[in-house]
Length: 143
Image (cartoon, rainbow, N blue to C red; front, side, top):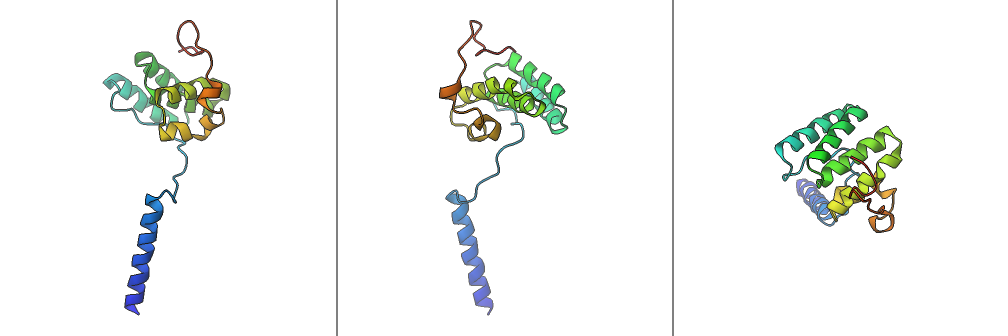
């Protein structure tokens, strides 16, 4: 009897490992802001961390301000644009979030969280919906 239970346990653990390694178990979509990347300056990393804290407290306007500061200091961070997009999406109106989701996707091709986030997916593919660049290079939005 003990051998059957052990065998069942081993078989079930093998199945779990195979499911996880083959992608049979999917993670829930990212609904939280991203942490600062390794290439963020110390100031920008701190701004993103503070923005993320405010985001988790549902203080959208304050979080938006921190993410905007981070983007002004280091405009090429996909994570800062994504987080700003998420905060704008949560606060509404969602139309303000779209350019930042697109910018994040442009800056981080194939990033699994950015490209699979439900708010971003609502706006279609980057190829079909990227706004024309404005003369100031901000993809049709202001920082």
